[in-house]
Image (cartoon, rainbow, N blue to C red; front, side, top):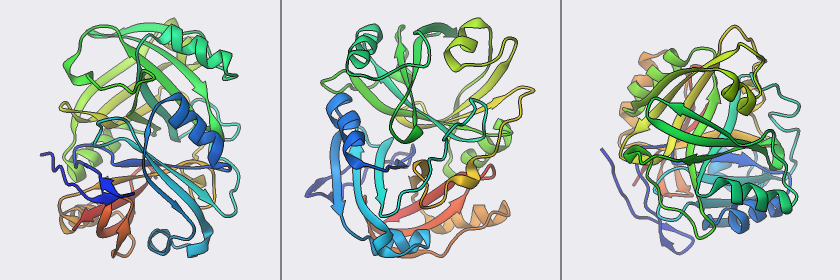
Length: 325
């Protein structure tokens, strides 16, 4: 069930939903290049901007208030999920995915849906951005897509996706620049089924897609060795195209575990946040799963006043859980 709740953020009403990831936190060494990309290039809107210490978030993350220097929350036009939370620590450290292999475990890709991909790629290349490969095109059952990957600020990996055939579950509104995101947050895990069941139990997500993908097209796009294959499970709601969790594992390939690097003050993708209807119910489920959680506390979050706690998924992804007042 979608709970659209309006709360004050940066002077305006900010809709949120329980049917997708509320935000993905990306720690940055320098805020300006990140804003240049997300706001100027992608057309995301600034929903919240705060400079200076944040005692509430710092307490939740068990760091000092002045360890946080600046925060910006970015929203795709009209979206109630899949926001980007840019965060600058006062002492930014090494990137989570610095020198990472494609198959390393941990947060990996931020998916952005776009129109007219070839034109956008040419424009970004002219602006100095570089891509990992040429644009690839492939089918997942009836879903016909184009895809290309691009390294971006703080060793984040951006995946641009263009859906070429009408698919109701992937209909989004685009910014004036022709982009919409974050549609999916891609996380590499050792076991997609175990991790998927966690999101289904805790957040009541549905399995939107489940595929084993192999062949030269996906090898070229992702950068896999010949003969390799990947398994993916997309979790979320068919009615909510933003903020889906896409879990990926690679067959017969063992990557390094980078979940252990997603602690303050690392840069890159370090965590994500969920709005829940009942924090008590979520904590009860986490306890039943034998998963540890931090202390609950009330403070003014980016999304409004609420009760929040910190948890970790079975694979090791850091989660902020928020019940709004």
